[in-house]
Length: 429
Image 1 (cartoon, rainbow, N blue to C red):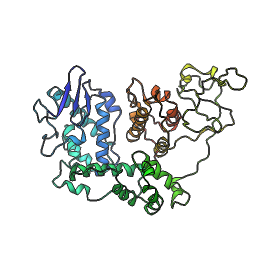
Image 2 (tube, helix red, strand yellow):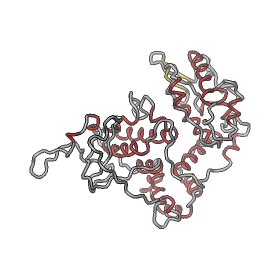
Image 3 (cartoon, one colour):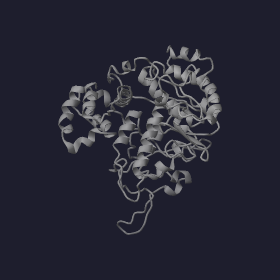
Image 4 (cartoon, rainbow, N blue to C red):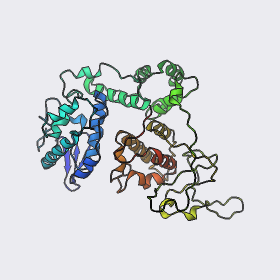
């Protein structure tokens, strides 16, 4: 069989490891949190489909995983239901798929689901109420299982052009995954040859190659060009003073001045659970091992003292208590777009401590959450936190708040980048 069903836990594990929980479909949340497709290129459609699938599965809607579609298999939906050895999902999910198909069609029929003038609107309309059939039709020209000459999808390596570095990297990774399925050999950007091609298609390729060539030949520095460190390293190269066009990447911004609200300013209004953040003088943002603002100070006279002003805060604010500092201190610049937030997150050093072995797992979950919110802003308002899966929203996650090395990034991200439901986030031009 190509799946494993756990009746006791009420879940099905699919062939690629995707877990689908058998829960009632939440139609309200599905219609309230659509996942629009912003571009109709092949790579953009594949990335959108994966985000669409992950989001709807959280509400009990079944969407077949992207890389489980097979050539000449599955009929109109692209997958089969049954208890045979060649079936994709078990028989108990048949009714769920029928209900999901109707709801998916309603969602795909919205005028804002695809770009204006895109032929995908007509593709959906021709499926006459069958959402799962519409999803397969959308992938018809973008998935290697549905076209006669799949090698034509990987004839051209992606180029950066006007895309951000993060978007270009995601498109390159999608290309490599697609090529591994079609041509049968898997390579990632960690491979020196693939990284050469990736850099060659950047906007400032000549400058980046000249700066990074010597470092990449040194075994001790190879870690800077692997995994998540690659994006951080390339950003630091592009921010060098002699890099052509770095004035586009670095736009000077004035320090934002925030005045303290009056004592009665919040009467009758909704107060945020995350107060405005002030940095201590000389303190590094996200410094590992920095003392907690609620900890006592025993230096000097030997008597314990607490941060000033904390006695006037509410209980909910104590959870996110930071040194508020003097009124004349500058406030750290908040993130203005996801590009800046992602770069800052990649620069955070994860402490390696035996008493906190979950640091790396929490960091990875935070990174995935930021990318998920970038693709679908409404993911921040899911009833189950996308970081720890707890019964709370992302903005109230105790896991991120309890890890000191992530706390300041988390608060700054929530203050400026976290959108309201169904509102697009600011993006870097």
